[in-house]
Length: 230
View 1 (cartoon, rainbow, N blue to C red):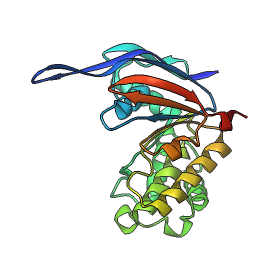
View 2 (view 1 turned 90 degrees about the vertical axis):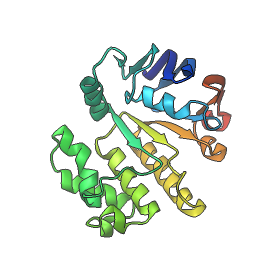
View 3 (view 1 turned 120 degrees about the vertical axis):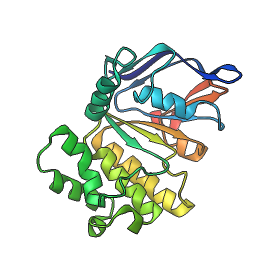
View 4 (view 1 turned 135 degrees about the vertical axis):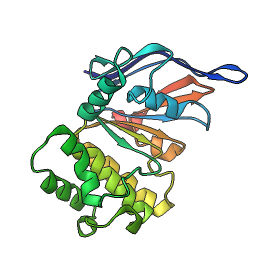
């Protein structure tokens, strides 16, 4: 079953020197449970594409279908409701709420869904990422790697059908990045979540089943990782 379908996606911004097109007729499809990476140099449109796929922004033309829901016809509030129901996020700069503890940050997506037993579930997730003893610390009291592990726990808190990760190890040193990377793939495999990863790191991309290569806002290649498909 297709979890994400992108059809002829184009994004153009207005600028002082005229219209600037950052995505050109991008199309692809991802099946439920797939792992998928989007790679390319800076300015190739990777993060813009990720934002459109997740319903954070609206394309100039083309369509995005997320879990069968067409996003381009929805209002901002409707897209936010779809994200809350179906999507998890991991960002390069963590984006934890600074006034909330690690535990409270992980609880937020579940509380927005009206879930029960949110504190126990959040503690279990923090334990899974090795931070049970840091649950009452605030983001400023945590290292970068610890903050990203909290964001990992938060991303899986609402049991998303699809997880979007934008350079999840980009702000971390190699050893810490390796730890976060291993946790990401382990949690994703256990949950059976579809993973869409934006990265500069080709070694990280090689851990996914498919790779979409971009340059200048256009798709230049789509590769199936033979090692993953065996």
